[in-house]
Structures are given as structure tokens and as C-alpha cells.
Length: 445
Figure 1 (tube, rainbow, N blue to C red):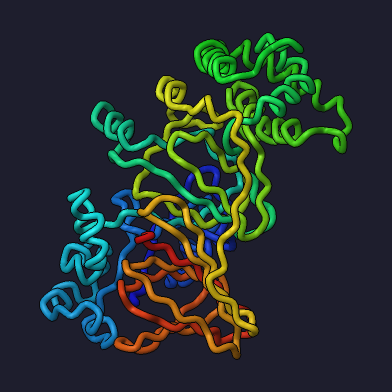
Figure 2: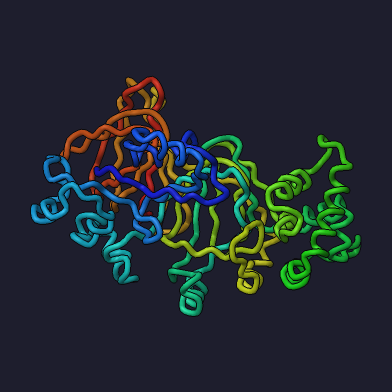
């Protein structure tokens, strides 16, 4: 087990300050920051959006090599490597390239390396913490063949050729997201409740809401409304007046969300109109959504754990000051899924003790990644787990120990991230009254 120093991404939608989920995790990676009042004050003004736990080149995790640390020396087991990088921060990928079988896992190499030579010495997934204060863009992630095409044609925008299915797990009870197209019945209700919306898309009681109608609506938004911002502002202003005339307690979720998005992005963002076409998910703690390639979504607020295939490809269509690739998004969206009802998913309990310790697995349907939540209670016998491939770990709360038969005992603390070697059984125990809570990401093979 090796402690990681992870990169925090300071996007505009992240929560402000070091006393936030990602801010605390960033501070745990830079423990010397409070020693400088000026640097600390500046850092406390940042928007801490994401903590990346992986080897993606846009934000690779690092380890501090210490030749004198007996446990690290035993794990790395390469005297020349240890001496060369002694007291240096190096990217975790250095270990994968040094000895892929040892640090990624022989089963991982056999399974993924033969399919994709790039994965012979790199990770198949990217693990993250997110803290959302302002709505993210309405977006989708391309499937594999489209990702390859986009990377080939626009490498400056789409910087890798991988697909990006993902899972989002709520860490609190206030997580909200847009996810997938509404059913025809629910979309019809939005039109009926919002006169200005129905007029924009020529909706009447006799309109048949199907894939063709939905695709036509998206085409109208992207190719007409979003190219005439004064007209768009006129529409959103009328919608605003209609909605604010309704008592707050009588507004629909979509109407209330519209006003929130209006305050965040202004009246000339097409995402305000687009938001009426999606399901609104209010997830409770430990509930999750699995997002498949091409599915539209947008996180609105809350803290979450996220894991995905190792990609940073994003195709945006609204609620963003960044580049919108409307042409690509228009053609990739799955319009025929509007009849598919989606619901939050919960993990599957694999172990529960009388003392409150537990192991819960979140399968995704994608072999590149799964997530496991481990909770250990003080005084309990603890939790024992073992995985075929390497794992990435983030501790969300508490303090405790992780013990390996070969490498001994390690102390782990809240907001710290760790790498764990493959094919190693380890025992997790809590040391404080507060339960030790950690999330583990690895491959589902």
C-alpha cells in the first residue's frame, strides 16, 4: 500500500474553499500548505471540483519515493529504482512501467493487455471525488468507435481515443443530477405545464412524442435557438415570468431547476431549455447511477465518488462557458431511449457484521471498473478483502489500519488516497469511534 498525492481540478463549478470534500482531500496531499498564510488564503478561494486518483496524463497521481521506508522498499522491491528516485515525487505510472505484472496484476495484463497494448502498463479506469456547487455542462461521453474518430479528427479537443462509461455514487442526501431523456408522458407534462416551452416546439395535445419528435426538438435547440441568442433570451425570460408567477410550493422540479440554472448561467444558455427534456435524479447517500456511452447527463449539486473508463472525453451541449460540440452531440444522443425508465441503483452487500462493518459492491456492467465501499467499526473484527488487480482507495471518513500479511500494517486517514497492490489480502480496521469509510476502485475481472 502506497499513499498517493493526487491532483485537484479547480473547475468553475466546484465547491469553494479547503473545507470542502475535494478541498480537504487536496489539503491532505499538500500538508505543508497551512505553513504559509498567504498561500493558504489564496488556496482557500479556489473552486475544488475534482480529485483525480489515477494515471491519466491530465492529472496523474504521484508517490513520494523514500528509499529508507522499509515498507515502501519491500513493495517496490527494486534497489536501483528506489535510489534513483529517493525523495522525489514521481507519477504512479512509473511503477506500472517498472513492473506491470507486479503493480497492475498478471491477470490484469493477461485480460486487458492483449486487447489493448496501451493497457499493458497503464490503468483501465480513472477514480475521482467530485464536489459540485454549480451545475456541470449537459454532456455525453462517446462510445469507443466514436471516441477513436473524434480523437483522430480533433486531437486538440478529444485528447484520447477511449470510451467513458462511468458510475456516480452519492456521498450525501442532496445529490442532484440530470440523467437520460424523460419518458413521453413526463415530457408531455413539462410541455403542458410550461406554455412558452410548448410554443417553442409547436407541441399540442395531438403531438406524438417519439424518437423523431425528440430529435427534431434537439435539432431546433442546437441549430436555431442557440444561434439566435436574443431570441433565446426572449424565450427564457417568458419562461421565467411564467414560473415565478407560480407559488414556489407548487412549482415542478423542472421549473425550480430552471430558475436555479438561470441564476447560474444567465438567460442565453441553451441548457436552460434543454434541462426540461431530462430526468431529474435526487440521490440519497450510497445511491448511484451508471452512465453508459452517449447518454446525456449533468450533475447539478452534491458530493460524489465517480469512477469511469480512463478517458477525459466530454461532448458538451449546454450549461457551460466551454466549447460546445453541438454537431457531434446531436448525432450521438440515444433518442430511442426515451421509453426506457431509469432508476437509481444501490450496491450489493457482500459482507455485514453484527458490529456494523460491511462491504458493498457497485458493479457497472463494464469490466474496466467497479467500486467497493468498505466500512469498518471500532471494536469489530474488521473486514478482509482481496482483489485480482491493483486498487485505488480513497478514505472518506474516520481513521484506521490496513494490514497485509507480507507488508505489515499501514495507518490510513480521512481524505487520503492510496494505491494497493494486486492479489493481496488485507484487513481493514477502525481506530476511532467514527466508522472508517473507504471506497475502493478496481477492475471487474
